[in-house]
Image (cartoon, rainbow, N blue to C red; front, side):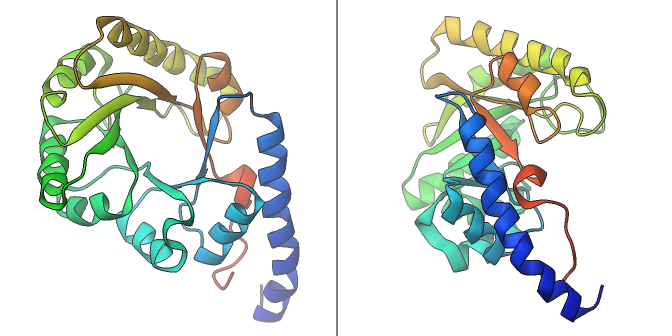
Length: 236
């Protein structure tokens, strides 16, 4: 696609972002929070989603978030929805309002240390590897409670719930067991009423699977493609 064609399509792309956001917001049940998953999206595209009603932007990478944050700032809240590397924690705690992907005591301690240095408490979700897939991030379900208890001792972190991925593609029903498992852990931990643990948020479901996730109790959904569409060209 040449630049001329790309520019001519961009107006339609803008309108489709607004249309996508408004459609999703109309359909989401009351009490469910939409996170606009903005991986690879430009600050301009992100701003269009914000203008249409998105109040939380989810970024997979600290470096991408930093670029967008410099343009957009605190007009919205920012969630980290991808794995956090320890060497990015200092910048992450300056940008993000929530880190949804804490899955080890090592990364939790780094977040705690960096938050202490700037005098803040970071709300986090514990990422559950509900499919027990070795190649994916997240704590295995059977280890989740022990990890929560350990992280709960850190004074500059506040555990606010759980997050899981599930399959990104394929039949949305394939995701249901992942969501059922994560909800089971969520309820179990909630019943314990642990200090410094408020099981408020269950972040499950993306474009392909969010409707199934809602049926299984999700109250945060992370949606990208339905909002932004597929990437059309590098100059957008």
